[in-house]
Length: 296
Image (tube, rainbow, N blue to C red; front, top):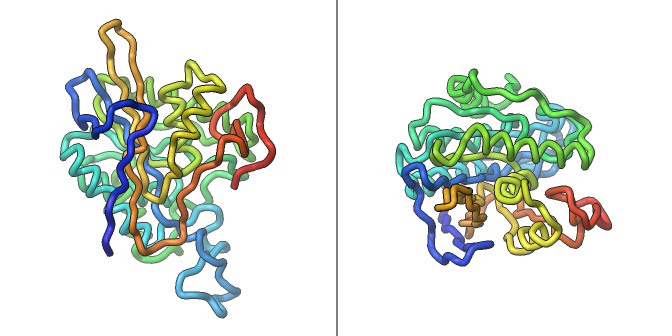
């Protein structure tokens, strides 16, 4: 399968790929969406009757579907590209949402970068959930999923933890959570700690990127500018956040959607973005109000 990368720079005037590694003064945070997921496919029939070749077994997977074979390929391609950008040793930590699809997306990258731990962070879970991850280590999943989850269990950082998110999650609970997520990432991983990969979900990826740069100075104008300047993020796509110490002792921040997988012939999980005018507060609490309808 041929995969190429779409490269674009947004919310910055620098038209080249910023350095991947900088000694303490600059930090790159690569926010990765999970790859193609099983729930993007038709629901399986009862007892597998009349099921298409690939279907979503809701009774087995609940709200926590794994990656599809296509999603695993996408995760490996993203790992390959990030490894070429940062090199082994160029990323100090991977933080992932506790959902199976994000953990499976993080696994190839951890292997490629020879990292010994994955930090599992509930604060970067899927947006507006009625419940938390359902059977994240379901022993009835496929043999390949079981093997992946076993490997993730070995890499699970037992020293890192946040409490589970509150569900069912309202808009207000979500806004509070992504604000807490952004602050937790900045506090746990200051610029001096080096580069970081965050593996999360489509909506949460935008929220965390915005929160890392504008969480302390959010306004309607910079929220609109951020959302409108971003492309939709595809499966295994990446938003790059660059944080850097300035001469005045402050931290500057830029948001760059560096690339999406393009020309990928597999998968039913589509690129996603909620338009600002459809729901001004979808990603972050906004003075403009909630908006005309829920994005889906």
